Image 1 (cartoon, helix red, strand yellow):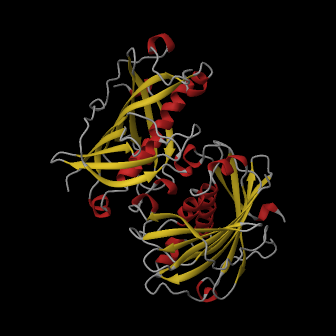
Image 2 (cartoon, chains in turn yellow, red):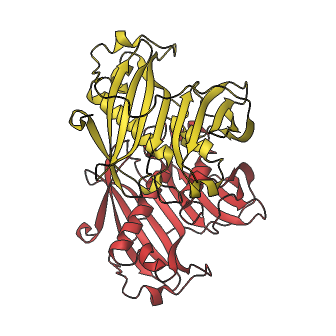
Image 3 (cartoon, chains in turn red, yellow):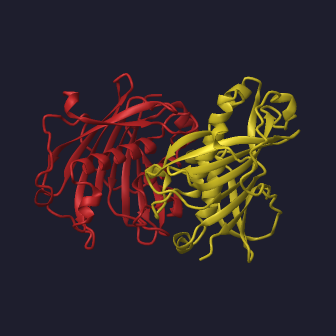
Length: 246
Length: 246
């Protein structure tokens, strides 16, 4: 992969973004990755602001992130991003995260749809982003985001969507789902080891004031979480976490 | 007040720091103010890292913040800070927040003690920060942080201190208390008006896993909040919010 054809965006780990280990949290890295997607889409003319002029917007469907090293507080890093394919319903955007020495510390892959803002239904991408710059020479740096099957599981927490958790449309910020899941994990586990890979599927949006429950199931290979709307058990999102060896 | 003797620190409102109105939240501005305090104390040789070498640390006791205009997403601003007095138990650090045109958009005043990290008891400041640079020519830009009296109130929420809310010492991040209080307010209120002044008293620390309840009382002039530890009703912190007129 030649780096010089990928645009990199600079970041620095802020005090607000670290946990008790003084390293960036998984969800703050996820935030920076999504922010990079927004910046790069703006640069190529297909940002949210452009799309909204046509009453359409991007929706994140799946994300996979692999982290080799969580950056420290105040550490500088950069995120490079590129599109690796456009299907009828879904496009793939990849990311590579490098530290200041150029070492890869994380990578991610995301799947996006375009929806009509009124009907909330997906649109044909090829009709909407005809000149979208596809750079298929760069392969996806990690395995594609996986589909996570439903499971029964046990309730480990419940939440009500609050003021500090919503975006401009009063929907829950997607990275808050990861935070909610991680908030249920034993602190000792987060101290002694770290998440090596996370896959997450976003299935339905939730809104301010809605009540959700968090379900959990562990297998030998991974831990799975599902967030369901409390009123009707609608599945909102599912994720799987794989850990570095203890 | 002559500006050139105050050190200013630059900031930019990040996407993580805005609410559904696309403006910086009160608690993210509070975070930047506390970050400025840390940077300036480091610069003058009395930062947390220096103190911890002597088994002591700063503890925030009271804070008052007045906000004339909440900065927009991506807006640049700067925070100036100075010490206005050192007593036996408490020192006052003031702040002024200016936008890129030099207009004052907010100001704050904070009271700090130094404690022994083992006993958690306060130490005589004058014996510990002898050469601390006091600049009394700059007056406090707003009324000093008020003491907030206890009240009975009604329970409006309860919380358990979680992974995403703790600092390096596994204590609750102080700005999370403000977030918890604001999370109980009606969204319409936060849309139509904004908090003009907040006073907050930090009384006791809370730790990971502790359960707290949030109490509320409204008077004609202000709204008061108190956070109490659920196990023994110990008062953790109290705050009063005053609003811009609707």
